[in-house]
Structure formats: structure tokens, C-alpha cells
Length: 315
Length: 253
Image 1: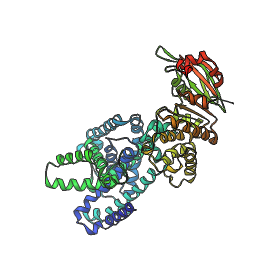
Image 2: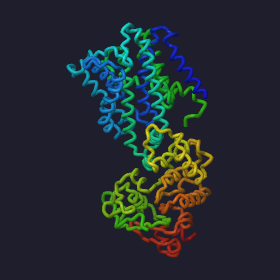
Image 3: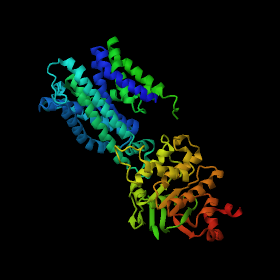
């Protein structure tokens, strides 16, 4: 009940935000929305299935580069097409990568995903004729539902139509992921997380389920990545770098991976915190490292774990 | 009707011979206990019968299908379930969710990606029925890790039964449970098996009260060979056998 009320308040606040809060802060919400979508995927792997990926940025970058290539090279500007294209490309790439990665668990899975992420980073960095190298590829302003909004300048476009578009995509992604987690398949994933050997003996095809979760996570990552690249107007290799994957894991731990809404809270708080700390000190990475240490040691269930502490102690 | 059949099964670990020409036929309606001293090959036999280990030579067939190396998921589909010696649950899942996993697998609904689990009435009524048979009907919402040890064991066995298999293999179903709880668990288990259409139970068991109290056939293993395959009464009458398999201490009781 309380969770629903809080959720309703959050939705109303987000709908009203562009009118109520300063423009600058509205632009900060855009990457938070995009990251939230990517993190919903990452958390299906980690929170639900128990597989921690250190290479999720690969798929975020893949989504961004798909949007960049489609707008710049193919002059496809419909954002719906860009998002579907990003999802398809990520799905196709995730099949071979996933088939290899889900053969392993725990740190071995993590290291292999990290390796694939770095492989993709090297590809983006070195094949500059195709990828633009360290300069990346520009992402042109997309059309939303066929509308160009030519009368609006860049910021007006971003904090107006694009803001609500991104919010709507986030809402759809959240509902879709909620359905997946609450489905029979989602229960199978949780059973795998809790005890994979037992899961197999009660009829769960463990590796196949892990593979599906991997592909779904990749698709969410790429849709988030495509949305992320619109406000910055650029897809560059750092999106695939391992520190970016690290940031994604950080956001997840910050929000709380054992809560369905952890990814959303984590992305939002991370972006706002990063902005605040960066404006105060150039040593913001140091501060973030300290924050991460505190979270892992004292609040392993993240910010939403703090709210839920009374419900059930962690055993 | 023959359900499970092992023909001249040999299993070597390196040069060590764990099973040395074991032949066994399990028919519908049987409750078989496999007994024998430590190292006799009991667990190896169960692993071979469930396809977890491929025999070095010989065959294992379940309802005519070759079992060797088929893996647990296909084993469950064929109609064979297994539980292990150590209590094996999903700590973070509730009792109801734990039982829903095998129920969904049996109904081939486990892979449904967008269906609502909460609204799947047939699954939940099946779950409730199985939970009631195992005396867990009032604990459906409890996370498995908060159950007492005896209930965890029951849940473990119940989740194997929830596949509604034809054959259940259990590695010491009452291990790790207090003596007082053992008979309660066995009675629950036998009743549930009858109600759920389980046609044969095979168990590895050390506790002779349980072995003689519940099985109608005993297979005694010794050094990888079948030393005896007979009714409990026949086994009890054979002093030499008891001496070999159970030791003099059992005779002295």
C-alpha cells in the first residue's frame, strides 16, 4: 500500500517536474531515465537471476551506436525506429555473447562479460572508419512519433517533448520488466538464483533460462543506451569502457538490487549525486569510492533496503 | 510393469570399481530400500539410475528410454524425481513459490515470460493441494529459510513429488532429522506418494527401523555388488547377510 502511494507520488512528481523544477535539473533527469531502463535489464541478471555482469555497458554502448549510425549514416530519425533497431541489434549480439557467458557463473561470468565489454570498446576505438574512433558518431535530433519539433531549440526539445517521451518509455519498460519478474519465467530465474542445482532437479532448464535473461537484459541495456545518446548527441567509445559498466553496478548497489525499483532509485540518486559532488570538488571519484564502500559495508541492500528493513531481516 | 531397469552396470572411478555388475529391475508398486555399508556403492547406484553418472559399462533404462547422461531437466520430464541427502531448498522463496516451480515445469508453463504467475489459479490450487498433503498448507507464505529443519526436509521432498513423477529416488529422506520426526516424515511421504500417483519409491537409507518399517523390497549392496535382493522378512532371516551389511551390532540388538 505504502509502496503504491509512494509510486503514485513519484509518477506525479516526474510528470510535473519540467514545469516545476529548473531546466538544468530537468536535463539531469534524462540520463537518469535512460540508465533506469538499462539497469532494469542489469537487475534481471543480478537481482533476479544472481549473475553479476561487469560488461553491461557493452549493450548500453551498442544501443547508443545503433542510434548514432541510424541517424547519421542512414538518416533514420524516428525515435521509435531507433529504439526498436537498438533492441534488435542488442538481441542479435547478445545471442553469441550470452551463449558463451552463461556457461559460467559468479566471478567467471563477471570476468567474461567484462572481457566482451572491453573487446567491444577496443573495436569502437580502433575501427575508426566504421565507428569514428575516439570521436564517436553524432546522434542527430530524432523525430518523436513523427514530429520534428523544428520550432524548439535543443534544450526546449529535450526538457519538453523528449522528456515525456523518455518518461513514457521508462514507464513501459518498468511495466514490462515487472511482468517478466512476476511471470512463471521470473520465478524460475529466482529459483536459479537461490539454488541452481535444486532448480534443475525440479525441472528448470537452468542454462537456457540464464541465456534468456541475458538477452532480455541486453535489450533493455540497448534501449536505455539509445535514449542516453539523444541528450548528449553523441555515441563515443567510453560508453563501452569498463568504468561505465562499473558505474552501472554502482547505481544498482546504490538503489538496492533486491528491490524491483532499486534500478530507478539508483540511477536517479547516482546522477544527482554525481552532479552535486562534481560541482563541489574535482576529486569526485574519490568521494564516490568512499560512498560505494559505505554502501557495501553498511547498507548492502541499498537505499530501498533502508526503507524495507522492518519487513524482514536479511538472514 | 517394469519402470526402471539396470542391466549389468559397472562404474569405475579410475581403477576403483564402485559398481561391479549391478542388475536391478524396479516395477510399479514397489518401495525399494538400498542398504549397505559406507562405500558399498549406494550413492553411485542412485546417481547412475538418475542419469547423473554414466556407467562405465551396462545400461540403464527408464520406461524403455536410455537414462545415461540425460540431465536432471529431461529426467524430470520423463517422470523421475530425485531428492538429496542434504536438505536442499530455495532459501529465499516461500513454500508456495518453491512448490510452484516444479508444478509449472510439469505443466510446461515454466517458460512463460509475460503470463501472470499470481493469476495462474490452476498452478496455485495444485500447489495448495501438494502443500496440504505434506502438512505445509498453512505455511505457503513462509520463506523456506525460516522453516524448522523437519519442515525444510518435507518441503524438499514435496518439491520432488510436485513433479508428479512415476518414480522417486531419495538419498536418505530422513537424514538430518530428529528420530522423533523420522516416522512422521516417512508416513507423510508414503501417503503423499499413494495420493499423487507415484508408482515406485527407491531410497538409500541407513536407519534400519525405516528400512524394515516401510519398504517391501531391500537391495543390499556390498563392494559394488548386489548381495541380496529380497523382502524385508527374508533379509531379516539371513544372519550372514545382516552381519555383512549391518555388522554384528545390529544382530546384538
